[in-house]
Every structure is written in structure tokens, then in C-alpha cells.
Image (cartoon, rainbow, N blue to C red; front, side, top):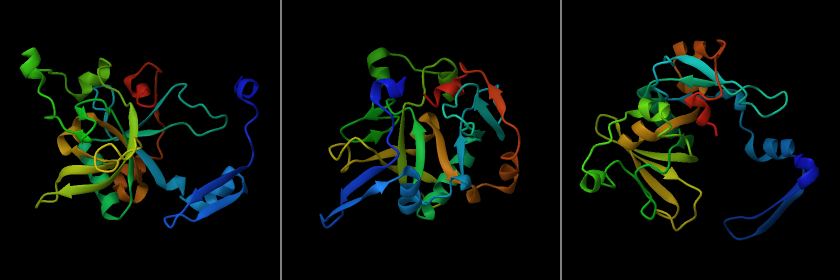
Length: 232
């Protein structure tokens, strides 16, 4: 159906860009695989998807997948390793310390001030307006569809306290230079705990115990499970 309406996908393309000195370059025609090997060259087999989905039916340190989630013929199934928030956070910190950016998925619209680029649980005081507290925890928000993964960005920095614990995170977004500090936003660590669900890290940053879990068969969840909406 896509080919009928949009045409047959090209097998090769041209990539055009200007470098930091404003010099124009053109590469092509080049296939997607050739582009990947020349300009990306990341071993995707060394990457793993960690999630923090603290619902009662998903014990930590197990692999999960969602029925019907895959959309690539002969593609590998999506596999999530569910871990506690401290394990997920430590892997992100270790990646950044080694000068690797960290892809992540979150519920970006929650407690966000767009112009400042602030992701902060204290950025709005709803109690003043409504006179009530919102008491659902992270698991409850997932189960009742009050929260879901709506956007993906990149962690590029972390502010650690004197004990090495994160205080806030530097986030690179794709909404243009008018947002935050020339396109960079900040995320308070408390916001990380509540609204960040997923990161991609290299296997070297996992413990031997977690590495052994990667070879196990995933628990297959129904398509309506809250974990399924993390990949919408």
C-alpha cells in the first residue's frame, strides 16, 4: 500500500551537507547500508534497551517483548530488559562519563516548561489551582494510561553531587535552537525518576548478572499492555 501511494522506495540516495566551515559536500549515490558503514559504524549487537516499568506484573531483571510490536519482515523482535531505576541511571551515567550520548524515551509533556527547556517536577504548582495532590506513582500512571513514552531525545551531560549522585541532566532535543539553551534542555533527576522510561546503552555497562539475562527468552506481553505504548 505504501508503494502504491508513495512510490517504490529508492535503493540509493544522495547525502548533501555543509560542514562547520560552511563547505558544501555531496555523497552518493549511496545505499543505506553503505551510508551506515561509512558514517555510523556502530555495532548494534553491542547495544541493549533498558526500561524502567515498575508495574507489579513485570519483575525486574527479566526480558520482555510485546506481541505484534515488530513491523519489519524478518526483523529481530523488540526486547526490553526491565531494571530498577538506579541500575538504569548508573548505566546512563557511566555512558556519559565515557563520552557516549544516551538515547532515551520519556513522557516529554509532563511538568515541562518549553521556552526554558525545563523538565522539573516543581516547574508548575497545580495544588495552588486545584487544591489537591496527584497521587499516582509511576506504575499507576502507566497502568491507567496517564503517562506514556511520547518523545525520544539524547542525554549528553550529567551534574553529579559530591557523592557521585545525579542532580540534573543535559538533554539535546530536536525542536530547534529557540528552545532552552540553543536547543539544549535540562532535566532534574527527580523528573528522570518519574517520566523517563527507556534508554539504550552498551552491554559493557551492565553487570555480569544482567548480561546473562540477555540470552533468556522474553516474556511475551499482549499488545494492550502498558509496555506496548512505550513504543508507539
